[in-house]
Length: 368
Image (cartoon, rainbow, N blue to C red; front, side, top):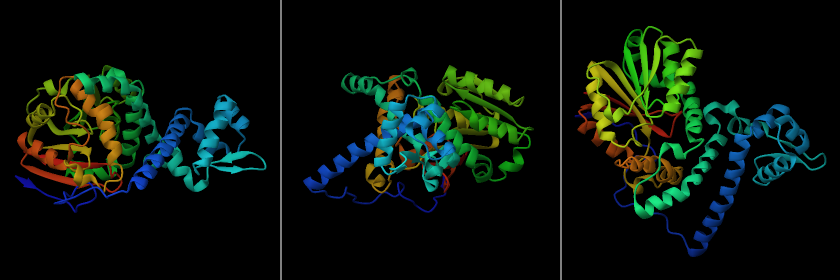
């Protein structure tokens, strides 16, 4: 088996003897207080994102809470409390004479959709995972897990988050990672496993009208959304199917199989990887994109967002897999286990690649 390793970055190396930095009891207490405080800011930002409050403020410019509430169609008392919380969090400015709030110009890219994939406020809506705490607690005590139906808005959030990354990187940076793929996409068969609402498929179908693209997903809601979106875009070369990809069998059908952040929450990820291998035609490629990190926690000590990824795993990715009597692989299955499972599925040439504009993921280019 050939594995080409890129230069290591945080989350990839596995130190021989790594330990968490020692904290005094006072430092531990200070850290917990900081976490509690920042959790409050995150909740305020999540509400601001869902109500488009910061988008409206950035578009209007300096505004009082009453002016902003009227423009956003919200209740002033709620608006004022959120704005005050974000001001004391040092994310908004406030003219104390006119009582007008503003989004500092230099913060616009990270606080609003103007930043595309740089918009960090969208990530705060992961706080909505707290709504399943009761179910996850019961699962932790008695076994089992959750179902996708338990997450009212999470699918929408994931689609927005991944869509912003796809639009910024998929065509110009990700497609060229696979040798000769831009030229081959002038006429090949492609399938995307776990396609969600289908933005990767529609982007590719628009850019390469001579190829055919199929998206598959376990969620009927996601597939219906993707079908409607493709129809609205007039894409005759894109289709979407309701499919449990662990029970999918189309040997030798596709030139390119993709899976974008979809393997780690499968009930039977090994079966999905085997099916992806079997679906490839001679000379075909599997492009798997999944969370960048180490399979061992000590390898993630320097990964700044690792704690959040473990939390997302417990409250969603691992839990939905276990809820289907699955493996419970989890968000942080890591590079080492990913390489092992790809090899076990029959891939012999695996190239894990890091993309600077997407530090959360590793891009695995795998061939039989």
